[in-house]
Image 1 (cartoon, rainbow, N blue to C red):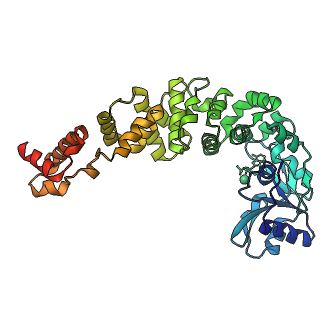
Image 2: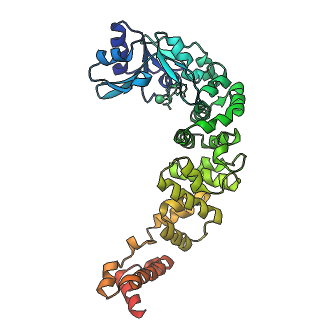
Image 3: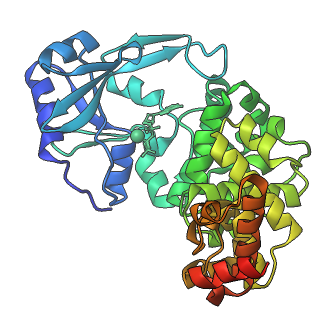
Length: 384
Ligand code: ATP
Ligand code: MG
């Protein structure tokens, strides 16, 4: 496995903490990505220094998550999260620890982390600290809980979604005991905030393996969002562009076709998606289920009535036909009609009559694109 050397600004943070007498390591996602030969997005750091010490060692650093011991250090325009080693105690609500205790032991900090591949640390000298077999699991491409999976999911039910999310992002398999525990503890997902579930699902949808989005449903993790159990047929997600709106719509279409949900808008709203996504995906799924028209003129009528995004959501396998219409430059909306409202006002049209006249012209132009010339259209009005 190749190891990318950490950037100087991040190494300097470790050195500064060590010079002040504390232990400091890169931890979590950056160590995992590094061992996979992927450039980490950020270089999260863990240290034995208590938060107030971190703040005083790095002037200008910000207490961004002091409750959890996280301080953001800014060096040369880069942000690095530095977090004090910690232990967590009690998880009465299955989603966050009742208490957090700052400690000086790295291994104890690693042991509270979710999966073996996320529970490794890297020292400034390049030494890998891997007490739970993370490297072996990386090689075997496995997502395995640190410790007893059932207990870990009892503590924090989001970890079940995270297991599937990492399996989608990395193309890994969820290890058998971990997978069995997800099945048994799936009901605990009901304790989670919908926005956090939504965040994990979206990461799956936008990963290189979006079809994994079927798995939270087959494991029973989504029971409180669906009206019937089952596994959606999510195969077509793989063929959609990597676009959040299209992929949410694709998932909802599969869920409606599979009878797991009957109302895309209600499903997405329950997951706290934004209003635009809820409405557009809902319209798109309804159009997809009723079947898109074959011919260009009818596609243009749909675009005119529902907008580009909703029709893109609906197009699915018929994307080429839609692209042909969108790329043709042919007019399908009032925005590109060669006659504007002002022209009709000048001719004495008002209110509903004006709207009807524009609608009439647009309909002619959708049928015959070559008519979209100002003089031609005004002439047609005259005849009318
Ligand atoms: P990404 O590249 O998606 O950010 P990541 O591994 O950095 O991946 P984060 O959610 O940023 O994931 O979390 C950082 C680290 O914190 C994880 O690698 C893991 O060690 C630990 N962690 C995060 N969430 C949990 C959790 N719910 N339970 C246990 N450990 C967690
Ligand atoms: Mg991260």
